[in-house]
Amino acid sequence: QVQLLESGGGLVQPGGSLRLSCAASGSIFSIYRMGWYRQAPGKQRELVATITSGSITNYADTVKGRSTISKDNVKNSWYLQMNSLKAEDTAVYYCYADLAPRKYDRVSTYWGQGTQVTVPS
Image (cartoon, rainbow, N blue to C red):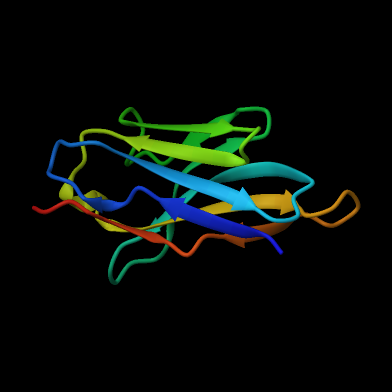
């Protein structure tokens, strides 16, 4: 059973920073890609940032230049550092991972439960 657990959300003032963390636990053979999506009220879930097992990163234009995604392979964890936060960053942030639980398993996508980030206007 694979579980993803997020932490680090909360209320942040405009211009502030926060660091989201996601830790994967359970049966994990290999994580191929991991990252973050977010969903604001009344909007579709959108990509924020991803990082591959080879450390190739990708960012949404809305956060590029003020966000950094990183990972810790030993801990099966990844992080999203967000700076210069704006009201439009307010959303529920979900971490995800494309991983294989065991060596010959197909790669599937797993999701965390979400963590709220609120930046008042």
